[in-house]
Structure formats: C-alpha cells, structure tokens
Image (cartoon, rainbow, N blue to C red; front, side, top):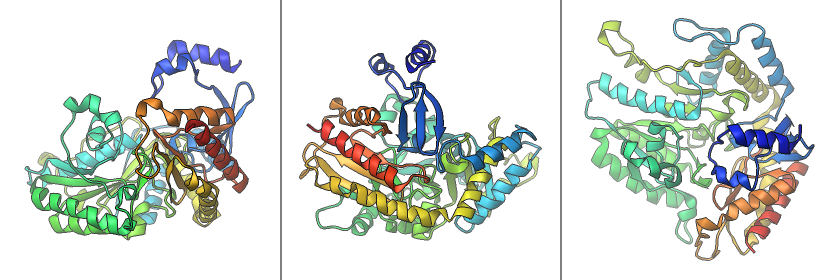
Length: 448
C-alpha cells in the first residue's frame, strides 16, 4: 500500500482528465489516502497543501466534520430518487435558500451534476425560450474572447480557449466572439474601469448588429478562470446588463468557479448590482463533496415553458442524478457554514493576507503581473516583463513550478504560465505564507 504500488495499478487502468498520459511515464500520479482541512496525505505519508481547492471546488476543507455529518444523516434516510414526478426535502430547502441568497428576481432552481451541464442547460433554456416566444431566428450566442464555460460540446462552443476547443471546432456551433475586458490587456496608464468601458464598445456594437439573431450573452463575471485567471472591472457587468435589457437578449452569468465567496462577495454579480437572466452555479455549491450544479432563473423565463402539455413547450432536459439528495445535503451544510461562521468577513482578512504574501513577487524580473480578486490571487510569468512577451508554451514553465511545489509539499497547478492561489477558506495565515513562499521558490526555479 505505497504510492508506487497504487500508481502502477492506476496506470494500468485509468485515463486521467486534462492530462497527457505520456507525462505519467516519468511523473506518476500521486495517490491520495486521506484529506484533512487544507491538507492531502499520500500513501507514503507525505502531505500537500491544497492551494487550488482540488480544482476550485473545496470551500471548507477536506473531511469537514459538519458536512460529513450532514451527508451521513442523509445517507441513512435517502440516497437518491428521481426528481421527475418526485421531490425531497434537501432539494426543496436548498432551492429556497439559494433563491433567497441570489441576486433579486431569480425564482426557480433547475439542477444538474456538473458545471458544463449547467451551461448546457442555460444555453438550451435561452434558445428554447425564444422558440416558445415565436422568435425562431434567435439561434446565436455571444461570448468573450479567452472565456471558458466547460468541456461538453455546447459549453465548449461558447468558450474561447483554443487549447480545449480547436480540435473539436468542426463539431461546434459558431458563437459571436467579442473582445474580453481583461485588465491585463489595458493600455499603459489606463485604469481597469476605463479599459472595461472601452472594451464594452465592441459588445455594444455586436448587440446592435446581431440582437435579432442572438439568444444570450454568456460571461464569467469578474474572473476568466481557465483563461489564466484574467480579471476585469465590475463596470463591464453593469454596462452589459443595461445593453442586454436594451436589445432584449438574455444574460447568462457563469458563476460556477467564481460563486460562493471566491471574488469577495457571495456571488460576483453582486459587485455590479446586477441580476442575470440565468445564473449558473456549481463547484463550491456542495462544498467540494459531490457533483452538483444549478441554473437559477426568473419568472419570465419559467413562464415561457409553462403551458398545457399539448402545447409542447416543456423543457424536456434531464440528468439521472438531478437534485441528488446527498449532494443537496452537502450543499445545505455548506450554506449553514456560510450562515453561522461569518465566512465572507473572515475571507476579507485572509484575502488581504494573501495579497500581502504575494506582493513581493511583483518585483521578480519574470513576473509581469500579480493580480487579485477576493480569494483568488494570480501571478503571471513572462519572458519579457516590460513587453509582457510570454514564454514559448512548449517550455512548460508552469509545469516546472508545479513539480517544484509538490516536492515542497504544496499543490499548485498553474494555468500555462500563470501560478495562482485559490485555497479552501479554512486556510490559516501561516499556511498562506507557506503557499506563497513555495510559489516564489518555484517561480525562481522555473525562470532560470
């Protein structure tokens, strides 16, 4: 029962996600035996600080006793029942609570099991809405450059990260892509708010020209996570909400990665004071315990599907595990922690400490930018700091940081050459200091 024995068994039978399996011939996967708080432990007894919340899902630490207890109680009562024609207490309670916490005007919750599935639902709902309203010409979606919304075909189509998308281009619907308000790309001397306002002109033009064929605009509010943790000013969201209202186009907010406190507020949309037509949630929704996602919508959208059966307007979309009771119980326990522990206030102090811990990296000769939005800090390495010329992607500088950090007991998984911190909210200031120190060492090692 060692790392080596488990890795050997793994490599005979498993195909890992987002991985070139050839890499594991030289660097085998690390078998994890247990987790506790922000720490993971392998079968050889080595520990790793989970600085990325196990792909951004874990909010309150591994093996959280309160979530454990809630799932255990639910497991003894009901593990699953279909949500077509039936219902159960965890799903009803979770829906009531999410709608009470979400931006005002959202009144219904539709569940799925992954973030990509939630985006698929949102796209289909918006398209189907316009079909039910007799606007048959509305078949297009507008997205931002450098955006990412998931790996299933619909979600992949409305993203713009070539690494994931280009192979499958012949299979995908064709969105209308406009420039991102990404503040990293701002002109010298411009503020992020000014840059966002200038970039919005492109979105305004697209809506002006293409509204009659457009179902919805889909965005990741404030942070384009898989696109390198690129960040932008909330003013863009305010301008976009007003424009979607003006041109009568849906606004889909993909908060799968940025929801539940990651950006400093419970939902990123709050920072612009807007309500999207569809709010997609996932990842942290269940505290990182079980697959669960949701689309929250308002009455106008819901009523477009509410009719006699013979009108054939129903939204006939389903997943076998929709609204799974165990996942909903975990989500309710997660919301209990937010309610009882004043999490957002504590996170402000942790975020400030993360910012200070990473600030010195801005002086590194191959760090182009250190940026932060709430509980997300990103450090962008570059070949040329002044011009921001990136390293050739083939050099895999971020991978060097990743492997160095593992040797030092920290799990960092850079996005290309962007090293980022996105830890569980139970991290301590001392653990933040360790995380930042190891990241700095890794960046020095990777940029020699």
